Length: 248
Image: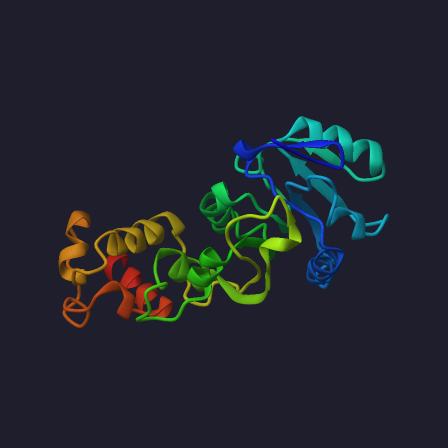
């Protein structure tokens, strides 16, 4: 385990501290562009981004590591920081979710966002670049998949900029990217997210097969116009149309 600002960097928590102030400021600016929402920061760590939030900002920091909670309470006493797990924390009001997310829980954080979309109008977060590319991917590309369809069905997703490994301590082995997701108010009128998620996941579980074959586990009659197509050939809108047809 390495040390940073007299804090222990725990590999088991996926901790890489952002120390390049130019990137800290750029990330904070992207978040503060939506500062009319209450802010929930995931994993504030040593406060690299936290310090840029205004004193009167309605802010909550959720940090899993108690050592970092104690550090933040000492150095940023006006900030409301609690020890907790964002994956189990109940979100009950509209918030801007943000953070330098641990790589090892990237997927769960995205699904947490989607499952709480009625309370998360904006999400600005840093992930491994490979994950952000999957979120914004176009149809018929290798990166296009479950995250692409689900995120783009409910959010307008935009890759803002990359953050090189050298901006962190210790440097990760990958490039990171900051992504912005703004809720699009459900243009496809998907009322049952669980059913929609199961449909998309089942389709991509065997992505090289046609939908007629990959969707067999659901025991539903796949419409003739998409039977011979593979899942990566369907836009989010086409998946929504399929959802409405199958579950109408």
